[in-house]
Every structure is written in C-alpha cells, then in structure tokens.
Amino acid sequence: MSLHFSVLASGSTGNAIFVETEDHSFLVDAGLSGKQMEALFAKIDRDMGKLSGLLVTHEHSDHIKGIGVLARKYKLPIYANSKTWTAMDHLIGEIPLDQKFTFDMETVKSFGSLDIESFGVSHDAAEPMFYVFHHNGKKLVLITDTGYVSDRMKGIISNAEMYVFESNHDVQMLRMGRYPWSIKQRILSDVGHVSNEDAALAMSEVVGEKTKRIYLAHLSADNNMKDLAKMSVTQTLQVRGHIVGEQFELYDTDPKIPTVLTAV
Amino acid sequence: MDWSKIKTIFILSFLILNIYLINEFLKIRNSNQHDYIIKSSLENRLKVDEIEYVEPPKEAVRGKYLSATPKVFTVEELKKETKLAGQKVILKENNALLESVLKEPIKMGEKFDPTMLTAFMKNNILYHEQYRFWSKSDTTITFYQQLNNKVLYNNIYGELTFFLNDKNEIFSYKQTILIDIEELSEEEKILQPMKALETLYENGDIKFGSKITNIELGYFTYVHLASSQVLTPVWRFVINDEVNLFVNAFEGQILQLNTEERKWSE
Image 1: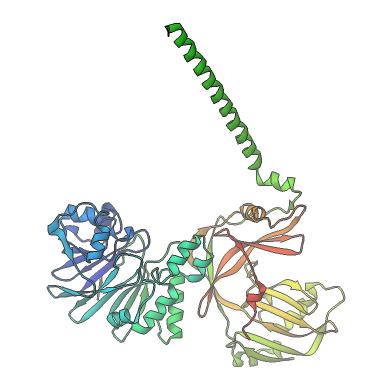
Image 2: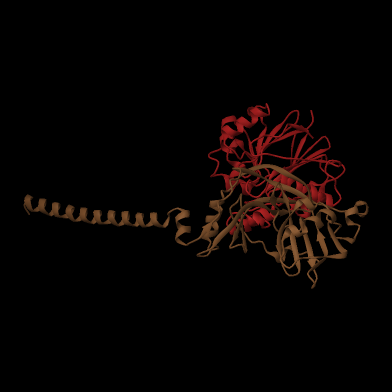
C-alpha cells in the first residue's frame, strides 16, 4: 500500500489532514470538535480508533480543538514539540503521560516504512511546525499557517509528489475587507498567513519533475474564494513558466468536505 | 427604639427608593423615545434632509462575482477587420490596448448627444455594441463596456475613449475590451439599494437637498490578477446628475474610484 492522504477540513474553522500507509495512520491536527472529526472520518471510511497518533502543528484552536477529546476517547498518542506542548497543555484538557510524546522541530520520526520530518514555519504560535511524509521514495508536504516560505523551508519541501499548500487570502480582498486593521496587519505579517500570490511564487520555486498535485489549503472564508485562489495561483505560476494542467494539477480543499483519499 | 418607629423609617426609606426608581424608569423611557426618533426610517431621514431619490431598481437577491480577461488583440485579426480600414491602428500594453488615429476626423455637433456616435461606432469600432456612454469632457468622450446591461465601471480594460481636437472633431480613440467573462462559483447576498444608500447617507456623502437621479447595479474590479480580474457587483448612485458614488453590493463598503489609479503605466 502506498502513502494515502485526505485533507479532511481546511480553513480558519478547523484543520485536519489524514495520512496513512499500510501499517500506520496519522491525523495531522484536529481543529474541529470530536464529533465533527468522527463525522469526517466516517466520510472517508476510516476508523479513528486505528490511528497511530495525532501530530500537532501548533496550538491555535483551529488546529487543536478536538485533539484532547479524541486522544482521551481513542487513547491516541499525541506528538508535538516541547514549546507547543507547554502552550497547549492547558487548552486540551488532561492527557495521560503515556500518551504525550515530543516531536522536536527539524527532526525525523520513523513509523515502519513511513518517515515523518518536521520543519519550522513562520507563524504567531509558540513553535509552529509542519511535516513532510516520506514513504518508498515519495514525498507528501503539508505547509500552511506561515507568513512566508523561507529558503530553508523551500529546501526541505522541494520536488515533492504532492503538496498541501497554504493559499490563505487575496491581498486586495483582505485590504478592502471588513477586518480591523490590526488583524489585517497580523495576517499580512511575516508571522501571519501566506497569500495566493506569495504561495504561487513559493510553489514556483519548489515544484519539480515529481510534482503531480497541489492542494490549496487554509483559504480564508472572508478574504478568498476557491475560484479566485485557483486563478491567482495558476496565473502566477504561468508567469513563472509553470503550466497548471500539464505539469501538475491544482485542487481545492474545503472547511467541511474531505478531499478524496488519494495515493501519493 | 420601638417597633412603630422602625416601621415608619422602613416605610419612608422604601417610599424614597420607589420615587427614585420611578424617576430613573421615566428617564430611560424618555431617552428610548429620543432614540426611536433618531433611528426613524431612512425614508423619513432623507425627507427631513430634503433628499429626493428615484425608485431603486429591483435586483436579484443573490449574485456572483465575475472573472474576466483583457482581450489581447493580434495584428493578424486587425488586418482582416474592414471596420478599421480608414484608421491607422497600433497596439500597446502587450497588445491589450488598441490605439487608432482616424484618417478623416469626425465632426461632432455643438450640442453633444451620444447617439451622434451610433452610426460611426457601428461602422468603425470593433465590438461597438458592448459599450455604453459614460462621460464627455472638452477633449474626450468615454464609453465603458457593459455586460447584460450592467456597466463595468472605471475599468481600464473595458473602455473606449474618443479624443477630440480643438475643432470638436474625433481624431483618434483608444480601446480595450474584456473577454471570457464568467461567473465564479461563490454566490453572495446582494445588498439592497436602500441599504447601500443608507451607508452613503450615514457617511455624509449625500448633502442636504440633493437629488439622487439614478440608481443602478454594475460591476467594479475587485481583484487584479496576473492576466485576468475579478469583478464584484456595485451600486452606483448619481447625485444631481453630476457625482457618482459607488457601494460594493456584496460587502457594503463605499468604493473610492480614484481615476488617478486607472491610468496606464506609461
């Protein structure tokens, strides 16, 4: 069995990504309630009780809302770095010590044939990090919640088969929108979220001959639209010499509807 | 102290308290009435300020954003156009801007009427039916592109501008046009025109004694992308047949259509 994944939910209302191999399966973040998470699992026909663990990217509520409930109910191990543990410990309720595991930034953990590599991102959390899944020479990159994509990040995530890539907002929509100025500043900052255009520019530098699919993720409900994100990313990539539809495909993600479970 | 004195003190204390509470209640009630007067209907407030307005159009309750792409003209296609026979045409701005000089200038009458240009446009301008008259100055006559009778306001990529010489003759024009106009999938509620008018009124944009001479729905560029644009529905209010005010019909904010920003980079 190859590496499979589904973006169960993506956006400011909650994020969760399911990844599985033949002998292990993980949930990266659980930003919706336990009940909602169970409903999403049912939609992809998977059993939450069979998960090998929960990987946490950072302590913001749209990433950890259901973590505590699910860990307690299904006795699942939780993996997060030390700073994230400290920041989220009081937010997720009591977790037995034998379910708490540290997964430091820029380290690799192996689970059978699956290697999970963590890398730091630039976001206003304690120590935010995302993951690259390596399996049988193939690579799945998850990268959202970052104000920018640094050269270091680009080096780690380059030439993957598939990406789940943040495409949070359109800068013009955000500027004209109704958010208070302080929030606009936060989103636009280096520790905020990456825009459609900046995401596309970063993509243009990391996609390679292996790249087949890019999933646009963590779209703002107020400052972006699925069609707009796709158009913006497609056109910016085109300007940089990458033809969507020929080299690779772009896909949507949704706050409530899981993407089809896909083999990497 | 005996029981009867205690009773009297209690009765007096509660009497004073009741008087105080009744007084407070009356004050609150009066202030609410005052608020009610302030928050009277928009129609009444406009009437008080002697602001008149035409009947607002009845539009669909929900609408969609549009995407559109500036047409890139090609020299080959222009060569085939018989309409351009009497013109010297050049392409600029990555061929999205057509500039033409007429070999024979067209004389305009003393009293301008856009219909004066109907026959000329029909015979000499590509896609002439897609433009609607917008404004005239001493040196220019501007048309904007329209879609289903809705104008794409202030759109540098959907504009037809004629240039007049000092003999009041059209001697040249420039033209852009948007193509591949499609609805995006996201659907949103369209703000009712009176709600949009209220936003302008409360912002102090409509002065005492004004007359709103036209209210219509059109489109305005919301997002510029690398090779296309996204347009959002906007309400246009014409004040005293002179001033145009625009309100985003989805988001409700007042739009500043700064003409300075519209100019080509050159």
